[in-house]
Image 1 (spheres, one colour):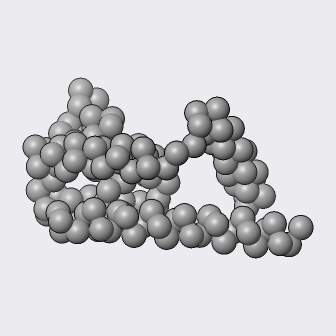
Image 2: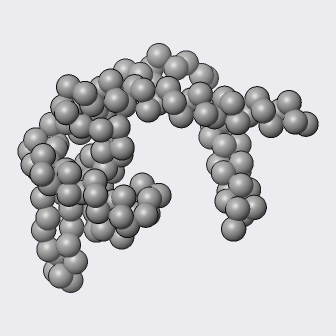
Length: 140
């Protein structure tokens, strides 16, 4: 059982490191950090989010989100707007949208290189979700 635990945690850590390395490599041309890709991705995908929504989708604390939003504003990648309920909505501006579109293309190219049959992907993600939910419950 311990060998399976070691294999599991080792593989998860390796995948995480590989993803971070790819993010850094891809974002280097824009002068951004790997963590900022998540913000650009979710803001582009959702056409804007509130601060609270960003915290939730990125699964990060308020300080981390605030820091990264400040950096993205400084780089002139995002804008703030108020909706009809006076909530602040963060959206990508033109420059941010261009990075988002480039990132989507690269994500699709990379995903094509990782071949797993569709039925196997479905089972993989189902199992990964179950593991995540179980670990979350144990960690509460």
